[in-house]
Image (cartoon, rainbow, N blue to C red; front, side):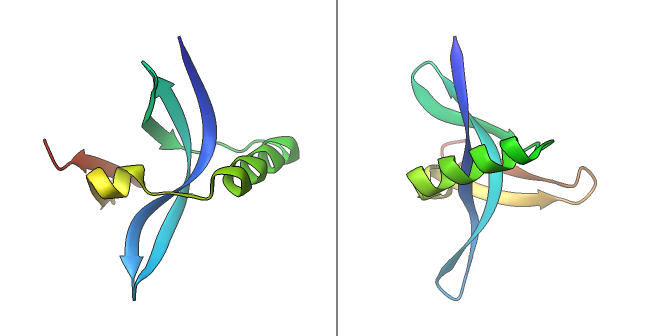
Length: 84
């Protein structure tokens, strides 16, 4: 079983400031360790995303454990773990 939430995830850094992207995070086996681009189809989903981001702040878990790169063809962020 898994759960999910919206998260503002750090994907880069510029001049010491985080650059973030809104993702849907998935809790698989007790850890929030999977994501996909956020799909917002209504105002209520936008409000839920805002509530989740305000509650949790900027998520740096992926940033601290790997590196993001922009896939121009797919139009989305890809992430690779430092271990991988």
